[in-house]
Length: 143
Image (cartoon, rainbow, N blue to C red):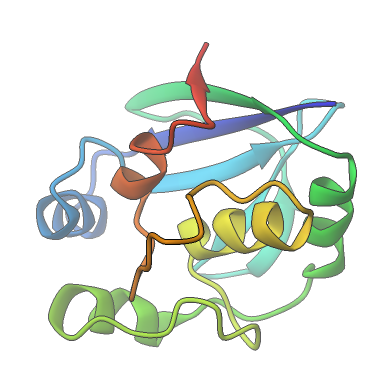
């Protein structure tokens, strides 16, 4: 199965801070579901589905992976947004695999890993996963 991701950014201060602190042109990532809806971790709604909306900049990435990756993402619906990740990624680093709450890029990396299609080689260790890190994955291809 082909999994589609949307990296995006909007024109606001929060997105600018995330882009600056992670040295990325993108501040957010979502799974693009087969019906076109987006699934991701959002500050106001936690892990949720939403219709696509306007973004200032967008990039689509794709990867071959089992359907189980999306099933795992669906299983995370309703979990809260990980506000501590935003601050600790900027300041301290953290264990990005803590599954009680999610930051957008952590959620994507976790679902791929749990679905048997890790985005990074096993010898590569991260204390955080940012949208920029996803761009560095050899498994993800720009559309």
